[in-house]
Length: 325
Image 1 (cartoon, rainbow, N blue to C red):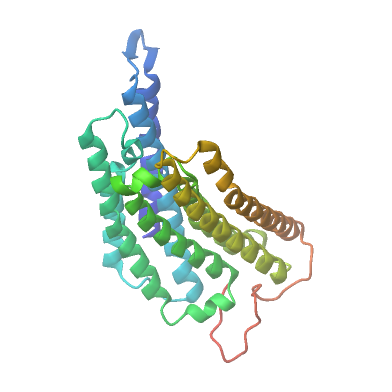
Image 2 (image 1 turned 90 degrees about the horizontal axis):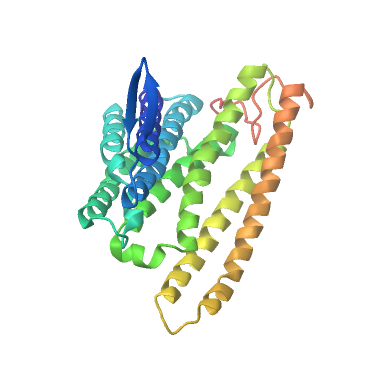
């Protein structure tokens, strides 16, 4: 299934990009003496295309790469096949069919045809099907092997990202509903949602992939399990704090914005504590990134002690099944 997702991403991204460029900016060029011209869209057409493109870059480029990576690394590390091939197929094709409808729900209340935003809401809600299929498949694959999260850096990052994918996708589906959007739209709640997807899901899985790939590229193991552990906890706590703080603050912000009796400056002032939590979370993640960079330099340059086996958080006893990095 990893090949399906990666191939899908490679196919979908050029299609998304070319379509958006042609509709938003138009086309005017000479080809073998022929003048090819395509007028750019204007006004609402540009805004609609912009949200269609932005949302589908997340769903048909970043999501397939992240989910496909998880489909490869989870079975590879624990040493067992994916639980259900048929669930994988359902998840892939449901993603391909339903996600392309999403995006326009961000323009609810804007000057676009009602059917367009409604169709986008339906597509977003139908995304619960592939999300449930992927979540169930990952969970059942990990069933009986969750203890390996204690040992494997790759598995810990990837499983965290897989859980974040489920959470952010379910949240995104309900966030598309018009009643929900009335409160959450144009608030820090949306910012929290975007970061949970881009960072909590995709970046964490890519960190896990890096911890799996680099020893195989360099022929050396990671020098310090302690640095990897610090990287994980700083980033995991950081994105959790970031998401939680801005989600709570954004929801209260949205409720206050709907109350015409509350001065706008008071709403801004009330969000300050949640923005402080965002700054603290950003610092935690930044420190984690610095540690990650140090780890990369150490493995590339061959610093640190030489290991004969994979770098694990906790060394395993001989009675336990072996775990990869």
